[in-house]
Amino acid sequence: MSTLQPLLLAGGRSSRMGRRKELLPLVHDIPIYMHLLRTLQLACPQSPIVYLSLRSRDCLPDIQNDPRVTEVSPDMLSIEIDGSSTLVQVIYDRPNGDTLDTENDMGPAGGLLAAHRFDPQATWLVVACDYPFLSVSDLHHLQQEMAGPVTCFQNADGFCEPLLGIWSPEAMHVLDQNVRKGDCGPKSVVRQCSGKTIRPRDDRCLFNMNTPADLDMVLKLKDGLDSGM
Image 1 (cartoon, rainbow, N blue to C red):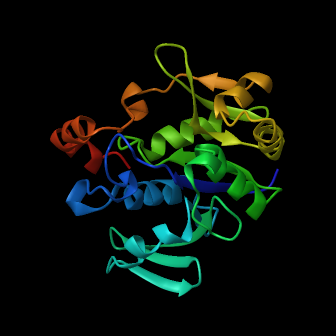
Image 2 (tube, rainbow, N blue to C red; image 1 turned 135 degrees about the horizontal axis):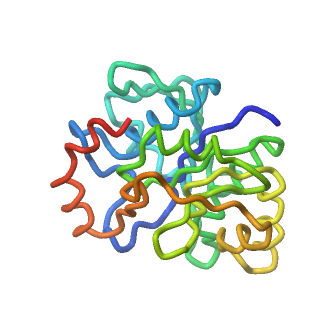
């Protein structure tokens, strides 16, 4: 199997939050996307690059304007996080980076397939940008349990969390075929591929930040984020 490639999905519309979730400041005013990029880097030290999926090229300037971000080359960034540099390859839901209209929005499937287009042979460690309590230990747990086409966490209600998971080329191919038929749901792939689902050691890692109320709660509990890596 090829080297596991770390992927952060940050292409959602954030409609319930009212602003881009990946840019929300958390610990020491570090945006959540930076926090999670660093978490992915530490979880996959064998990979020299962390991949960041955005909706379109229009989303990039707000990231580039941060003084901690340096453009190395078009769509390649170096980000200073906690005194360390993280090399980030930016990819887009559409191959040319065009803005997506609502009608053509595939949701997180767009980011997953963008990664698959970029490297069709890669297996991807996938994290969505709205899991503030996710730790390196959680991602190591996923890697230890990896089996079959797709492996992901399962929540306390028995539902799978495909955007905290490991996706093989086989699973990506199934997703691509589903999207062509109008089914953009990543959960369908887990079911079709008889994917492996595991319970996390700490359910807090599955907390999904979608609304301003969720953000308020995270900020009240953010001391836990300092030790989360």
